[in-house]
Image 1: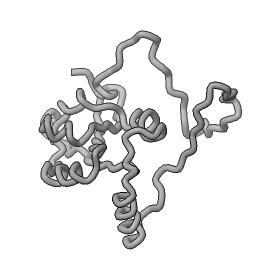
Image 2: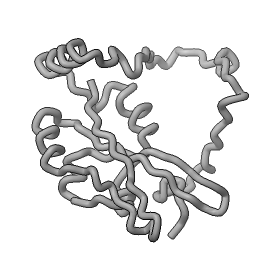
Image 3: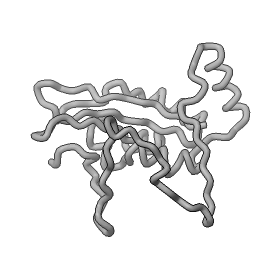
Image 4: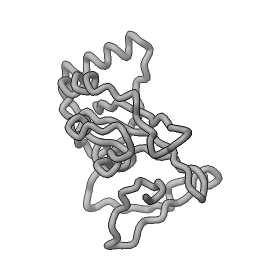
Length: 165
Protein backbone atom coordinates (compact mmCIF):
# COMPACT_ATOMS: atom_id res chain seq x y z
CA UNK A 1 0.00 0.00 0.00
CA UNK A 2 1.31 3.46 -0.87
CA UNK A 3 0.46 6.60 1.08
CA UNK A 4 0.41 9.94 -0.71
CA UNK A 5 -0.82 13.42 0.19
CA UNK A 6 -1.72 15.51 -2.85
CA UNK A 7 -1.47 19.30 -2.91
CA UNK A 8 -2.20 21.75 -5.69
CA UNK A 9 -0.51 25.06 -6.22
CA UNK A 10 -2.47 28.22 -5.51
CA UNK A 11 -1.66 30.69 -8.26
CA UNK A 12 -0.87 34.31 -7.50
CA UNK A 13 -2.62 36.06 -10.37
CA UNK A 14 -0.56 39.24 -10.02
CA UNK A 15 2.84 37.48 -9.91
CA UNK A 16 2.98 33.77 -10.74
CA UNK A 17 6.47 33.49 -9.23
CA UNK A 18 4.76 34.00 -5.86
CA UNK A 19 2.41 31.02 -6.34
CA UNK A 20 2.50 28.65 -3.36
CA UNK A 21 1.29 25.31 -2.06
CA UNK A 22 -0.50 27.14 0.75
CA UNK A 23 -2.46 24.09 1.94
CA UNK A 24 0.71 22.30 3.05
CA UNK A 25 0.42 21.52 6.75
CA UNK A 26 3.84 20.41 8.01
CA UNK A 27 2.45 19.16 11.35
CA UNK A 28 -0.07 16.99 9.52
CA UNK A 29 2.67 15.67 7.24
CA UNK A 30 4.83 14.80 10.27
CA UNK A 31 1.94 12.73 11.67
CA UNK A 32 1.61 10.91 8.35
CA UNK A 33 5.36 10.17 8.34
CA UNK A 34 5.06 8.67 11.81
CA UNK A 35 2.65 6.10 10.36
CA UNK A 36 4.35 5.33 7.06
CA UNK A 37 8.05 5.13 6.30
CA UNK A 38 7.52 5.85 2.61
CA UNK A 39 4.87 8.59 2.76
CA UNK A 40 5.07 10.92 -0.25
CA UNK A 41 3.67 14.32 -1.07
CA UNK A 42 2.43 14.92 -4.61
CA UNK A 43 2.35 18.41 -6.13
CA UNK A 44 -0.04 19.37 -8.94
CA UNK A 45 0.72 22.43 -11.00
CA UNK A 46 -0.20 24.09 -14.27
CA UNK A 47 2.17 26.55 -15.89
CA UNK A 48 1.65 28.84 -18.84
CA UNK A 49 4.16 29.40 -21.57
CA UNK A 50 4.18 30.70 -25.13
CA UNK A 51 3.14 27.25 -26.36
CA UNK A 52 0.13 27.08 -24.00
CA UNK A 53 -0.68 25.58 -20.62
CA UNK A 54 1.11 22.54 -19.26
CA UNK A 55 -0.11 20.49 -16.29
CA UNK A 56 2.07 18.05 -14.41
CA UNK A 57 2.52 16.29 -11.10
CA UNK A 58 5.70 15.76 -9.14
CA UNK A 59 6.41 13.88 -5.93
CA UNK A 60 8.89 13.85 -3.09
CA UNK A 61 9.31 11.75 0.03
CA UNK A 62 7.45 13.68 2.70
CA UNK A 63 10.35 13.40 5.15
CA UNK A 64 12.51 15.22 2.60
CA UNK A 65 9.85 17.90 2.11
CA UNK A 66 9.67 18.49 5.86
CA UNK A 67 13.46 18.86 6.01
CA UNK A 68 13.59 21.20 3.00
CA UNK A 69 10.55 23.14 4.29
CA UNK A 70 9.52 24.69 0.99
CA UNK A 71 6.02 25.59 -0.16
CA UNK A 72 6.81 27.01 -3.61
CA UNK A 73 8.09 25.78 -6.96
CA UNK A 74 11.67 25.73 -5.69
CA UNK A 75 10.81 22.28 -4.30
CA UNK A 76 10.64 20.86 -7.85
CA UNK A 77 14.42 20.50 -8.12
CA UNK A 78 14.13 17.87 -5.34
CA UNK A 79 11.15 16.04 -6.89
CA UNK A 80 10.57 13.39 -9.52
CA UNK A 81 7.62 12.91 -11.82
CA UNK A 82 4.70 11.07 -10.23
CA UNK A 83 4.57 8.81 -13.30
CA UNK A 84 8.16 7.70 -12.61
CA UNK A 85 7.29 6.92 -9.00
CA UNK A 86 4.28 4.85 -10.10
CA UNK A 87 6.10 2.83 -12.74
CA UNK A 88 9.62 2.52 -11.34
CA UNK A 89 8.82 2.28 -7.65
CA UNK A 90 5.27 1.21 -6.80
CA UNK A 91 4.65 -1.16 -9.71
CA UNK A 92 7.97 -2.85 -8.95
CA UNK A 93 7.13 -3.25 -5.27
CA UNK A 94 9.36 -0.50 -3.87
CA UNK A 95 8.33 2.11 -1.29
CA UNK A 96 5.16 0.23 -0.38
CA UNK A 97 3.93 -0.42 3.16
CA UNK A 98 3.12 -4.06 3.85
CA UNK A 99 2.53 -3.68 7.61
CA UNK A 100 -0.62 -5.81 8.16
CA UNK A 101 -1.98 -3.57 10.93
CA UNK A 102 -1.54 -0.42 8.85
CA UNK A 103 -3.09 -2.00 5.75
CA UNK A 104 -6.03 -3.33 7.82
CA UNK A 105 -6.66 0.08 9.41
CA UNK A 106 -6.75 1.81 6.03
CA UNK A 107 -8.95 -0.91 4.55
CA UNK A 108 -11.33 -0.56 7.49
CA UNK A 109 -11.45 3.22 7.06
CA UNK A 110 -12.16 2.93 3.33
CA UNK A 111 -14.83 0.25 3.85
CA UNK A 112 -16.56 2.34 6.53
CA UNK A 113 -16.42 5.56 4.51
CA UNK A 114 -17.23 4.33 1.02
CA UNK A 115 -13.69 4.77 -0.30
CA UNK A 116 -12.37 3.28 -3.49
CA UNK A 117 -11.17 -0.29 -3.25
CA UNK A 118 -8.28 0.15 -5.69
CA UNK A 119 -6.68 3.08 -7.40
CA UNK A 120 -4.34 0.95 -9.49
CA UNK A 121 -4.48 -2.79 -9.99
CA UNK A 122 -1.54 -4.19 -11.91
CA UNK A 123 0.30 -7.41 -12.37
CA UNK A 124 3.87 -7.44 -13.53
CA UNK A 125 6.20 -10.27 -14.37
CA UNK A 126 9.94 -9.81 -14.53
CA UNK A 127 11.53 -12.57 -16.56
CA UNK A 128 14.53 -12.67 -18.89
CA UNK A 129 12.63 -15.07 -21.18
CA UNK A 130 9.66 -12.79 -21.87
CA UNK A 131 8.94 -12.05 -25.52
CA UNK A 132 7.75 -8.45 -25.73
CA UNK A 133 5.43 -7.54 -28.57
CA UNK A 134 4.21 -3.94 -28.31
CA UNK A 135 1.98 -4.47 -31.36
CA UNK A 136 -0.36 -6.51 -29.15
CA UNK A 137 -1.15 -3.44 -27.04
CA UNK A 138 -4.18 -1.53 -28.30
CA UNK A 139 -3.98 2.21 -27.69
CA UNK A 140 -6.75 4.67 -28.48
CA UNK A 141 -4.67 7.07 -30.58
CA UNK A 142 -7.57 9.50 -30.79
CA UNK A 143 -6.97 10.25 -27.10
CA UNK A 144 -3.33 9.32 -26.42
CA UNK A 145 -0.16 10.23 -28.27
CA UNK A 146 3.31 8.69 -28.17
CA UNK A 147 5.87 10.13 -25.80
CA UNK A 148 9.26 10.79 -27.33
CA UNK A 149 12.16 9.43 -25.31
CA UNK A 150 15.15 11.72 -24.81
CA UNK A 151 18.30 10.95 -26.73
CA UNK A 152 20.65 8.48 -25.00
CA UNK A 153 23.07 10.26 -22.70
CA UNK A 154 20.98 13.43 -22.44
CA UNK A 155 20.59 15.04 -19.04
CA UNK A 156 17.20 14.88 -17.30
CA UNK A 157 15.19 18.07 -17.27
CA UNK A 158 14.61 19.47 -13.82
CA UNK A 159 11.93 22.01 -14.72
CA UNK A 160 9.25 19.31 -15.01
CA UNK A 161 8.08 20.63 -18.36
CA UNK A 162 7.55 24.13 -17.04
CA UNK A 163 9.06 27.29 -18.43
CA UNK A 164 12.79 27.75 -18.04
CA UNK A 165 13.77 30.46 -15.65
